[in-house]
Image (cartoon, rainbow, N blue to C red; front, side, top):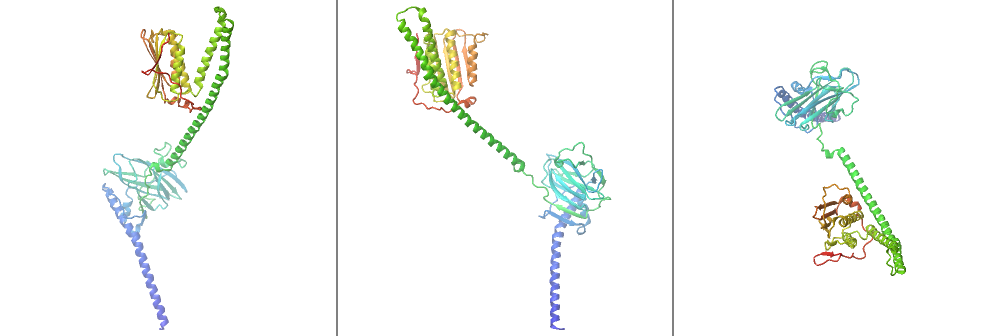
Length: 530
């Protein structure tokens, strides 16, 4: 034998040895992955099957970290395969079996709130294929009717009602679905939900049937096909697949897509509302500013144009009296001129009041107090009523809207008119003050008073005052008794939300401080009119 042939044989033997060594390592690797990881779960399944037959439930756990573990019947004892089928119901299907047919099966189970589930396991297979959902979340699927799938659902089912939905598909010939849900409760009680004729067949045209909490009346009952381990179905599955972590963890509502959409829509609506309010506020502010500019222009025109012409008319009448009748005592000849002059004076007074109301330069609390004091003095000048004016030494420079100034002034005028016409009073006290955020005007006389309970249609002035004060969100109150005088209260909250839209920034700034009413040492401005 030549050296060349010897070397060729050695190389061949070495190659065979290396190949056998690699083959042995590969076989051991497969043995370790399949037999070592599958036999242990099967033994546990066999053990739990025996425990179920004795009504003594045992938790099923596995040391494997794999999501999917599959084992063949030829690699494990037959009693483990039998145990894996424990808890299954019967084979069910629709009333009519067709080739290429898809059906929907529905069933619900209720877990007591006082007795939650500590262990849950679902076993299912179908001829030919299936998909399964729990509460609308897909658990898994299978496409080999000889394979039994076991889904571990421990810790995934909270107390309450749960819906199990199965979609089955038949390729040809016979068809069926078999299901078994095993639940172990906290008190040790065992619940089984198995496939039987109480399941409902949902029409394929129905949408969202996987989450329906109650069956519809037109959903027919499932049809019995065969019992477990009876023809025409298998007596034992060829393969058992143990699947862990099949149901995802419940997602908090605030992390769901629906919540994000609702949050975004709510934020969008909120931003739109805020922008709308800001735009409306800006428009209102500009409108008020423009309106106030026009009011101030009208006030200036009334004062400079109409006021000057009426003043000229008044001076002409007075000059006519002086020039033509210097020593005349004939009242009849002077009466038309006197009436004309008196009417001109009244018109000038009315114009001054209108200018005061619409002019933005006189819109503070102190301006209002000064105006009321001057008007009261002028109104009571020709009467026998003595008056005393009492106000705080320094009122804050808060703004009164035009509507408030107008209504309060008209209400005070009505009250003064009632004092002169009806009260027979000899003394009147006018008080103006600010308590907290409430502006208060009080008129108190020592007249004869009256009975408010008596129905008197002539007292429309009280209704007018109440209506004017109520229009600005204020309060009107009157205290009186026959023979005890009368006390009238007008109050208005400065921070009244109903009138915030009437408040605006003055267009013209004051050039000088308003003239204050003289006050004596007691803080009272008093004047007696004979």
